[in-house]
Image (cartoon, rainbow, N blue to C red; front, side):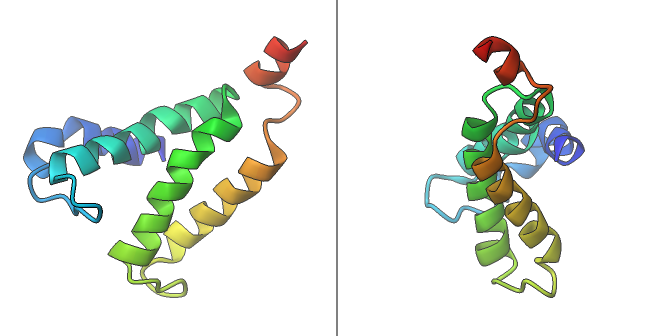
Length: 107
């Protein structure tokens, strides 16, 4: 997700006006939320920092990608979004691993 979010971050000015707006908050605001989820929350997950909290924006983003952008086609165009969504849901329930900043802070 990090390279995908970084690509959107670098092309924000060019792509924000035409970005999909499923919640009616504007293309720029929608793209900002997606960039936050795909880039910053993904970095938090890699570091193991606030892992369960960081998965929530990613679950929302992948749900919108799957059910709005790809019209719920789990075995079609939305296959990658469905795979990411299932992984993030599993991570929400399992939490961070043994080697994570969350575990180090907890001790």
